[in-house]
Length: 182
Image 1 (cartoon, rainbow, N blue to C red):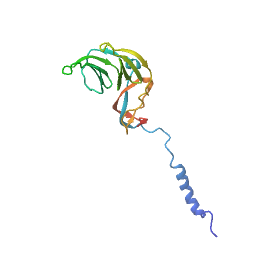
Image 2: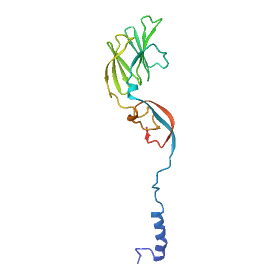
Image 3: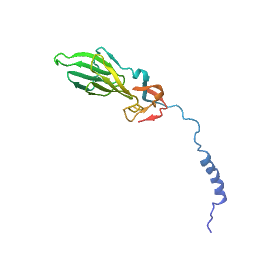
Image 4: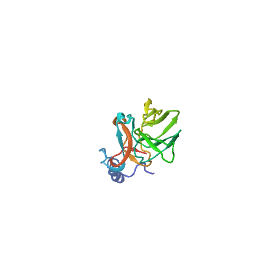
C-alpha cells in the first residue's frame, strides 16, 4: 500500500523547510533606497512670462528656424525665442526691422496681415500691418497640449508639473528616483 503522506521522519524534515520557504523569503516592506540616474529635468517659466509678447528692435540671428516670405518681408523663426522681421525689398541688402519676442515659439504661418504663432500652449494672432509695431490681435489659451514630456525617447525624466509653470526646455541632470519614462 502506498502512503498518501510521506513517512513521519520525512515530514519532520520537510516541515521546517516549508516554514523557511514560506516565511524566510519575506518581501522588504521598507521603501527602496534612493537611486540616482542621469535624466532630464524640466525648466519652467511662469505663464505670465510666456504670455508676454513684445516687438523689440532687431536682434542677432543665432539659431534660425523656419522662414516665411510675405511680400517683401521675411519672417524668420528663432525656435523658443520669437520671430525676426526682415525687409527684403532689396535682396542684395536685406534690412532687419524688428524682433517679435514670442517665448516658447516653434511654428508660424501668415495670412494677409496676420501672423499666427504658437506661444507654448497658446495660439496667438499678431497684426503685422506695421512690422515695426506688431500687436496681439487675439490669444486662444491652452490651444495646444501641455509639454509634459521631452521629445527624446528612451529617457527617464522628472515628471512635469503645470502648477510650476510652462516647460520651456529640458536639461540633463542627476535625478533621484525619477518616476517618468519615455
